[in-house]
View 1 (cartoon, helix red, strand yellow):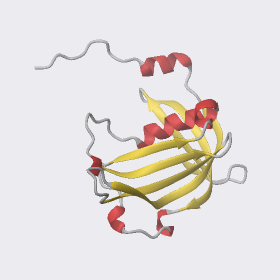
View 2 (cartoon, helix red, strand yellow; view 1 turned 30 degrees about the horizontal axis):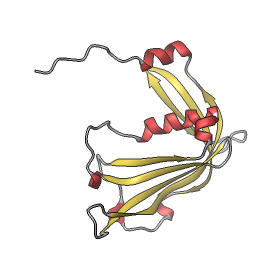
View 3 (spheres, rainbow, N blue to C red; view 1 turned 30 degrees about the vertical axis):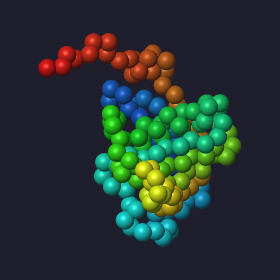
View 4 (cartoon, one colour; view 1 turned 180 degrees about the horizontal axis):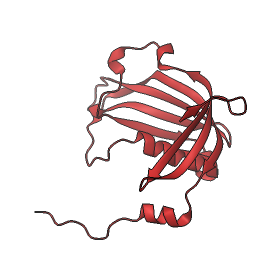
Length: 163
């Protein structure tokens, strides 16, 4: 959900649901936004349907600061896509990089991966920034209560039998 007001300009609220109820929320302010249209790149590098991204979180803050830990969880859920058993290297065509600049500020960028021949079996990869890129300032966050969190994390002990 995006909003703009005098008190909270360029506001973005990202949330998750569980059992048709709001599970948790993170409110961030967007600063220094560069849209996809402001980047020049080969349009063949656009993401393909069903492809998987690399997701990198750089900085100690994502492990120590509660607001940033929560933002990391929400962004991982938002961008990770479908869980798969095997991964084809050709299906990995983009990278999201989040860098913790301070206890509340994160630089977010989206890049495409260009595969080039390297003379070995594994190709050489180059990052081409395709946008958007922005600074996210964590304003508020709402964690789920502990009982709801335990219920949402619970997994079934009985595995279905294979036929």
